[in-house]
Image (cartoon, rainbow, N blue to C red; front, side, top):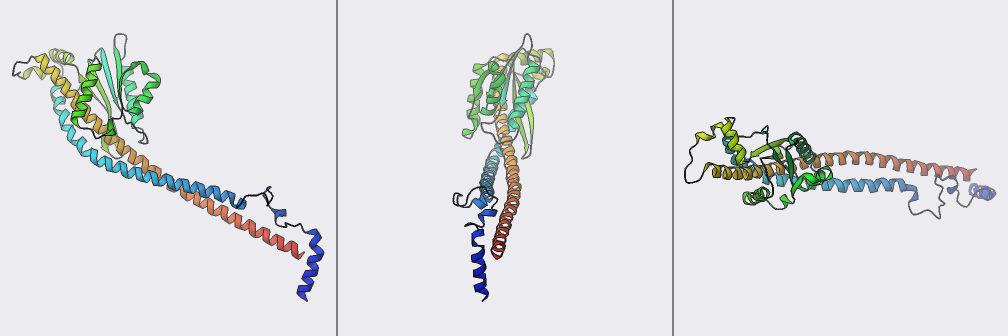
Length: 322
């Protein structure tokens, strides 16, 4: 009898109930027959897609960190061994960054790839500051750029001062022979009184020091030695063989530049990989934090959708019961 009464009540209220009772209280303005599948959970779908993208980015950054760590271990030992090449020249010929000369060449060393923090911007800033400091009415300062990133930055406002650009240094592992050929190419294309090499000296994975090394031309070395400055002890050495003092200084200057350049390239490569490790580690942690926030947003959105569905079902049942 109860069921018969319910059917009678249903027939009585049937003209008052729309064919789609739940659609009457839907919050979405899209009709149900026109709505795509899952229109109710479209917001959760967006969050799920975002979570998937963040997870993929996190996988990439973790892989890049591991690759950078592997490259750093391979380069670090070579960089430490290369320090013994240029240190004797510092004792013999000195390193005089404050020497006043007319022709300065700034050799800026950077990386070819990005995602390594601010090491390239630091090198460019120091190079620009050196250019401003060494320029004058009767002085000329030119750039020799090693690396794609420094080239891109210096091309914007100092294109006319760039004498030579060399890229893809780290495409293959460098040895001293390759760098000495590179140094010889630089010396053939520039006229200089002082070569100022700007690079990032490696200290640890999270620390690097912007450094400038100065290599003087043989004429300036001889002039400074005669003036009795820091290079005044150079005359205390005896010259053996048939070479003159000028020829020996020429050979020493070229050898010094190749040794300093070799060490600078390796030190900068170590700094690049260390900075990339730190950057990728930070990116991975940031991706994890973003994933936690997106998961919380997804759960809240899903719970809100479930609550809305339950409310609509209850509302529909109440309308049927009258």
